[in-house]
Length: 230
Length: 222
Image 1 (cartoon, rainbow over the protein chains, first blue to last red):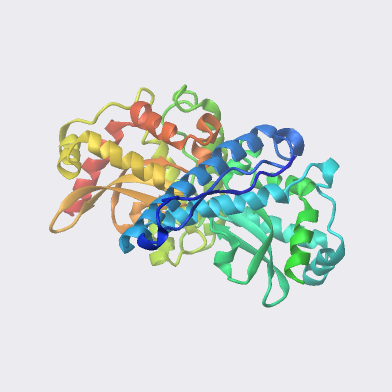
Image 2: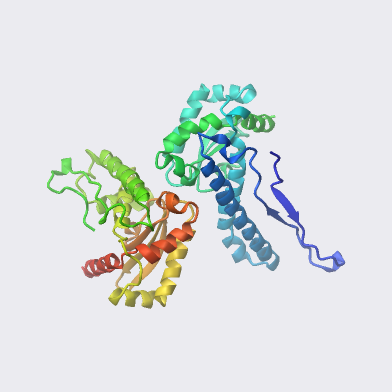
């Protein structure tokens, strides 16, 4: 299934002699990316019901609210309304972060028949063994961090581009990984908000974290790692 | 709220019990399903109580009331390990008692007077409470709370993250709604605003809120 572009450009066109007018910036709006697989394709690890709600409701709502916040920000910037500009930062972090994180997440998952669960080879596989001893050890650590996270958030495998090493991090709510360090690049993120697993796993988050590894798309993570560590 | 602690035991044996809601688990249907109560009370709340008991064994927290453990382990924001379990144990017991079968409607008497004084009208209070509950991003709670100082006695709507509650800021909690996703996901999925409206219209026990206000005024006078 082809991806729709994450962004469609919507230009504010004023048509007249631009030297007479105040510079107007193009306002980019975002739209829901298609999943690269059917909603039911990750079963039994993650149910089709969850995938559909998660994509069509939760992710879509982040995008809708992100677009709204950006439009309000655009207006506030043009008016020079600093108070509103600053006030909007929370909404932008929540909703923009939600869009960023979920867009990565859909790529982090793949049906088993398309390589979901297949261990990473190549340079990422080697880096995991070097940093963590083994893939099993990495999985155990990420799962433990994800299970221990209180409230809502994400657990990440990231590349620290400056220190040139792999790190495990958690972020609260929809904070993207970069909020934990400007040199951190997300390779793999696992959503541990309750909406990501509740209908299927109820309160037993550890079971969700045990089963999700069967559909983790290590090919994608490897691709990002190779590109970012070049 | 009575603490669910067996005070007949020595402090070294003291442990908290999982108190059942003051109604059967199916009594809030169709507004809050039996399945939700079974998981929310029977698993989530139960786990907080069990883990709290394990955590306080042999510590100086054992033997304290649940409220005291919450405040002590909040530690002015630099929380001790037991805070999360203690506060969530307290919050959930308070939550079950904030609801009743055939709930909703409007408060009366002094509670209504205070609401009208501090919010303008009951409808404005409802708007503010619903907004707080809807905009608490991620996990948390929304509260109606009472603050008594030398100068003033007033009601406030507060929202809090994760396990935090108004006890730690010296407020008297009067009403709460749980807005962690586990509180509404089985019944409402992503539709938190529908859950909040249903809570206000069909579940709130204004009797419980009034009784708490009475207690709060007595305590504030001391």
